[in-house]
Image (cartoon, rainbow, N blue to C red; front, side, top):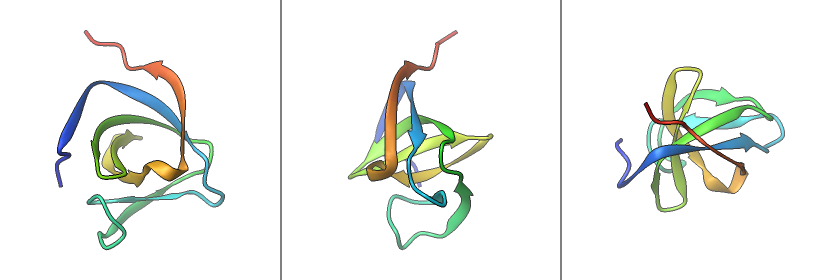
Length: 79
């Protein structure tokens, strides 16, 4: 599922959920789990939709809840 709002230069964040955070194929708990992103992993936010962020992590794209991400303040550098 594509995000309703795209972020031009992705913001970096850290997963702060003990045991990791489910990366889902859509913005909600009813969507299938693609993988578990480990606690402390850095993710790059590329979109947003109603409390969920579309991220890139280890080459995989998917959705995670904003509730468990701590922003680092870094921004992905453009070309």
